[in-house]
Length: 295
Image (cartoon, rainbow, N blue to C red; front, side):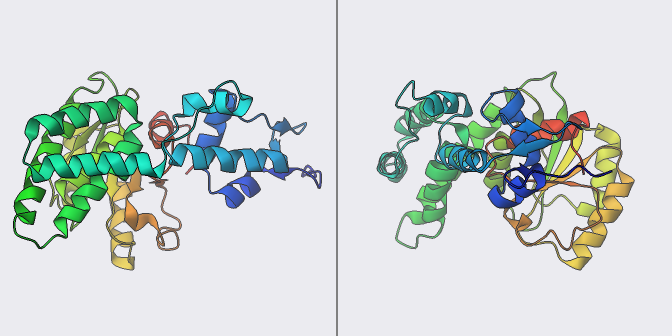
């Protein structure tokens, strides 16, 4: 017999629909951080109030703005005036990176890089400071713009590769492959966002043929395979992904800007969609590896 939901409470599926939060992230906020305390039905199903939904929206906004999840509890309880970095502060960081790049000042860029990753969450550093500068320089046409972009691109690729190599050697290894049109730096940024203490991300070279990924996985035997998308999945790619999923022994996940508008094409394929904007995307990937994520 199906349990009736009280009219003033919402089941998890409705909360996910209203807020866009990943269910794994929501459960982590409850169990690991104690930020959300849902009620329970007799059968153990979670029920949320309207206030819970607003709190979830607030937390999503704060973490998207750069507030570490570990600081959210303090903000909610009013213990400290902790706020995400404001846009003007990020403007200053971006301007400093542009200045160092245009001066071809490797020492200043190195100092900025280390200060950024010390003071701000990695998602904010990559999405809101470094990559916007990289993209703006790539679009430049003035004399010297190409050399400036190459200088920054080379610097960031080297530093992010070093960062990935410092991740836990004994953690589960995940393979990350890009699709056509991916720049190496974009893949490295995705790898940094997905990796860390819970799993190590190994980036395959740009131009890795999709049809050969099953062969690569058979040889390396990763804990999971993640494919980064640059464009929405079309029917042909969906067919290839379905075939790939059946040919590999590890879980399959997709990430990248191409996720938007791909859900219909991917219907029925048992894979995980990793939203890089999710504050706990690393935890979602780890749940996939551990087999605790419903596909």
